[in-house]
Length: 257
Ligand code: ZN
Image (cartoon, rainbow, N blue to C red):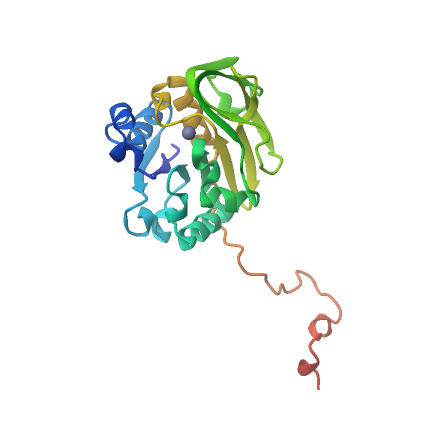
C-alpha cells in the first residue's frame, strides 16, 4: 500500500484577517479551505504553515518531511526571508514538489526557482475565464473536462515572464480577449514545480471542485520521489582503473613538489 502524500499548505494569511469579503469566503483561511478541498481527491497527510509563524512555519525538518509544498501569497512576498526562500529552493532541488498558486507567481521561492521576473499583465474586472485542457491524458488533468469556466475572475495576461515550461497543461481565455499559460510544469533538480493560476482571494475559486481537483492531482504528481542533496561537487574516484588519475588533479602549483 502506498503511503499518503505529505502536503504542507503555506498561506500568507493576511487578507482573511484584514478584508471582510475574503473572510466571508474563507473564514478559516485559504490554507484550511485548500486542505479540506483537496482531501476529496487523494490520500494526503496535510499540514499548514503561515507567514507570521516563527520562520514562517517552515523549518528544515518539516520540509524534509514534506512531499509537496503548496504556496499561496500575495500582499507580503517581501516578508518571506531570504533564508526560507533559499531553503525551499534547496528542498525542491533535493526532490520536494512545489505548487505555486495564483499570485504566488511573484513569491520569492517561485521567482528563485524560475530565475526570471515572473511578471504578467493583470486586471480586476469580474471577467469570465475559460481554462482549456490541452493534455487530457496527463495525470494532472485526470477528471478535468475539455474546459473549466470560472464565472468571475481576475485577468492574468501574457506575456508571463517565465522560462519556457516543460509542459503547458491549460491555457486561459478571458472575456477581455487575453490568453494566459495557466497550468505549467518544470523540473528543477530532483523536484517538480507546478504553477496553477486560479485563486484570486475575493472570489470563491477554492470552493470550485474542478480547481481543487487540479491542485490535488498536481500534488499527487509532484510528490517527492527521492531526497538527494547535490550541493557539493564530488571529486569522484574512477569506477575502473584510469591511468594517471593522481596526476590529473595536480593543477595547483602549490600541490607540486
Ligand atoms: Zn489575485
